[in-house]
Image 1 (cartoon, rainbow, N blue to C red):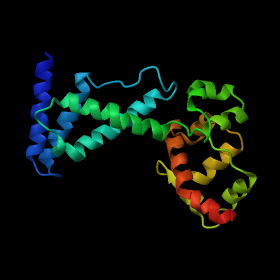
Image 2 (image 1 turned 60 degrees about the vertical axis):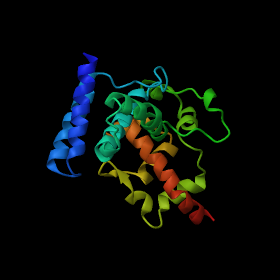
Image 3 (image 1 turned 90 degrees about the vertical axis):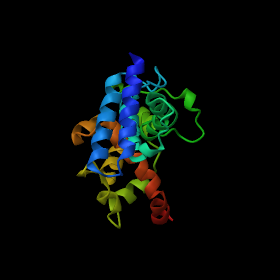
Length: 216
């Protein structure tokens, strides 16, 4: 039975490779390939038991990254390998790791990550805002809060996620610094915690030089 699945996946992968990129025929073959991979039930589940409260979000993100990679790089697939061997290697060794780094909260520099207790989503409201902030966001000074509120160039308010201007970096950072939980913010904006957390941390990296410029 498994040999039949492998052979079917190989046929679909080779069919996609036969057609030029961006053609309707390749897109159709890729759609059938991704559907068959999902229906096989053989996608790996890396690192079970870890990332409590975040695992499903990480896995969903990793799977999306994997499928995008397959669509963009199907020509890199070697027909001498089993398709599931190829995709499971990528999922475990690349995309799950990338997704976990994007979604998991940043750990303070100098703190051993093994000593950090990962909070489940349902536990967030049962923790004090101080405890929550120490786990999920970097410690930002009052000067940075004032900088966020002033937003001299409109960059913080103008950068948002999920096509929702209300879900902008300024709003998110001020809410977090004011003691609101990720769960509360997620409910208010109707956006997943993982999406907000990933967006927030990308903004911290993006605007780091701006904070230094404004506060110098």
